[in-house]
Image (tube, rainbow, N blue to C red; front, top):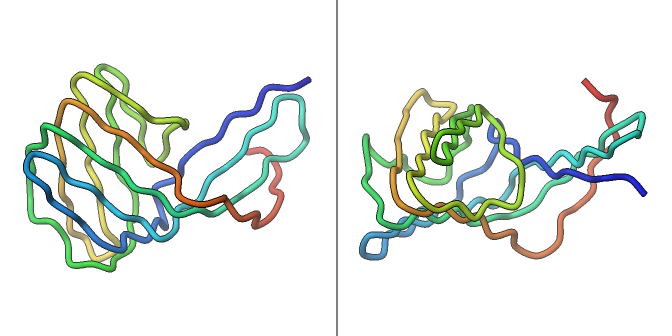
Length: 133
């Protein structure tokens, strides 16, 4: 039996809306790409799915973008670990968390807080297999 890892890709993610509730901000993505990496496999598989990314105890830096918009990339930080343009799932981080996102229009904003949780919505949809990079 092989191990499988699912990787959330930030470039190309479609940010549909942003919801603020007290000291929490939830980013609603209508589409993100997920790469499923399988140990000992010749290829990975590419999937798409809707997700919510929530940060609690949040401090906002920069202006939140007008939605809908597309991300060109960003950083997700879990305490001392920073993931550029991607992060392994599941994400249920506590402590010093940070989310810096860049849009394709050139704007940038950051959310720092004490918890970052990604909730996958519905089921992922298969796109294709791709050679390992």
